[in-house]
Length: 116
Length: 113
Image (cartoon, rainbow over all chains, first blue to last red; front, top):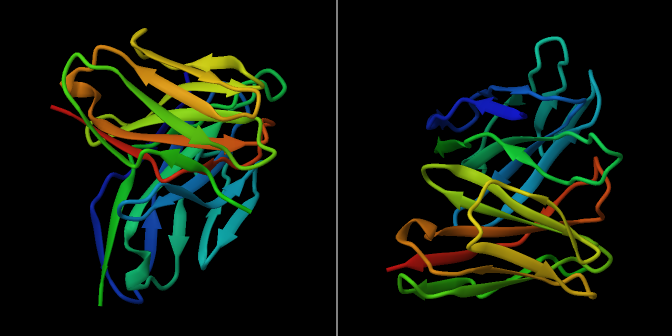
């Protein structure tokens, strides 16, 4: 079955540091890939997505590139802020039947803490 | 437009009781899916409904059930609650086609005592 593996952390950085959160996947089909973010006490918000190989998703300074050859979708940001402190989830969806099964498979999540 | 609304936000129940959680999707979204989030297991898929039909179900016991109404609102029910059912239950809605993003509600925090 489908699975997502991401570094579990926690990750603690100083403000303006460079961030990388690794994510690799296994999938039975050709997945679409997502990064979601969860702030304390909140639900999940979509951060970025990529639907085919070599696509780069980007939002709010975060980027991730869909690498089919390495089955990876690593999240990066050049300069983190205190407000980026949250839990980040890598996720995928594989459509095997023309869109009739919408089921996200998530990694375990990575807690990021950014100190001033 | 209004986001995904889950009610109630917090719930405390006793072992053996049953509970019903509600989810109102974004207007126009016909797919609603449910996830259980716990510190140990992370986010696990419960089930997904589209146009009142359950299309997919996760690996949970039969005590977990759901339904979707004609207006796309969805409910999930857990019967004979166990301590291990304590979790954050998240609902997500989307248009129902692949590659579209899912929008999540804030969740219902269920505590079983």
